[in-house]
Length: 101
Image (cartoon, rainbow, N blue to C red; front, side, top):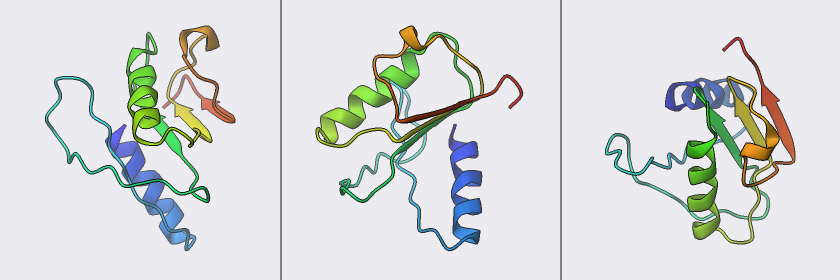
């Protein structure tokens, strides 16, 4: 997901859209930074996951996100694989899923 997020931010920056990446680690993971800024009402929150099978990682990311920002919501969920919506513990405003990432 980190590589896809970087590519996504690069494309948004080309369009003069200001973005920042907040990497939420999986339990036991120690790569990448642990920086998690506060979220404002005007922010658009996106989860990008490049490999999904059970939905556990995405659900874990959402749980951590809500603990840090109880009033914020996920606006977009971008996945490289379709999953049954009942495997998710939340419903994003928008969902993009592809079998071909």
